Length: 449
Ligand SMILES: [Fe+2]
Image (cartoon, rainbow, N blue to C red):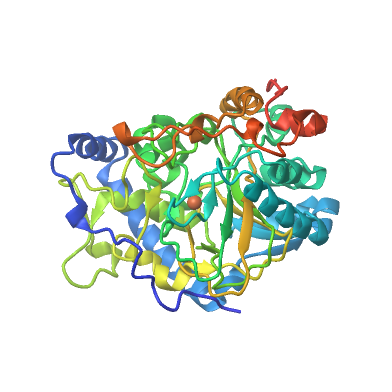
């Protein structure tokens, strides 16, 4: 059931060499440093290999459509976790029925009541027509993410990752989930939303500028993209994706971003879009800043030259997520490969690798609200545990955790959040959360042995 983008939304931005800022010596020097470190020949070899491999990937995705997104039943993977391995190449999957459907339907009713009861204090984005609410620990969110089945799914997803710097025992402890807070979305029919075109979360320029982050992509930059393992967290766990502060940054390492549906959502109803391939698409994104397009036919990678001169990192604005567009990343053929995910029902979950290109549909052509709780799978790395210890203190105090202290804006225009979720009507007592959930929320974090 292909579900590709039939009309590319005109409101999504395009990124071109005109974005180059010649005064940005930081980016220019960074590019020169990386070219010197890895070598022009290695970068060129990697570029040609990657673009050639992309040929096969993009034509496969265009013909498969959203059949390329693996689908599992929660009951099946909870009894046989090995089945999940089948999602690693795609880097994303749907796991249905993590929360029983009737429970999820009731949660949505409860959520609407909670927001109505706290209408005077709940904020969201975009402010004029809120689609994403700045709520992180409403009763509904706390109940869903600490649900033992949900936590077990998160654990199994974390276990798909390896860490060559750890022993087996350490890796097992590190795969314990932590509950990084995130917001929720309620999208109404007809409500336009242009805010989330194709992007990759987890920072942007930090992928190249932060040395630990860059080491994650070492095999790609050294000319061997085929050797790149997207699931090795040895360096990624020490990376700083929020190296350049901004409202879109996430400080923790998420194994998979994810959300849990509270309502049905079909393609075209304001839902998620993905490019369901992780290895080759990531290699292309990492290599793209080092090459400039030829005049005329850009398809042949051999005709692209190494870019020594510009400071342009396509679609990269350091305070934002990594942005992509057909103009800046042409070999991805995003018009054909960025696809709406299959139908979702209340209680179903979708998961996508932390480096995966994704977007949110601009229009909602359905008849009912489309609502999801953002709940990722995040492992207990030392840095994640440190974040979560502070998170528990913030949770108890009712204030947003570090990544959500500010609302929209950048630099001196950042607006401090005044919201206190503990003070809201109907706030859930933290004492009512089971031990396993409290630990994942940061109360008593495991020390990784
Ligand atoms: Fe995102």
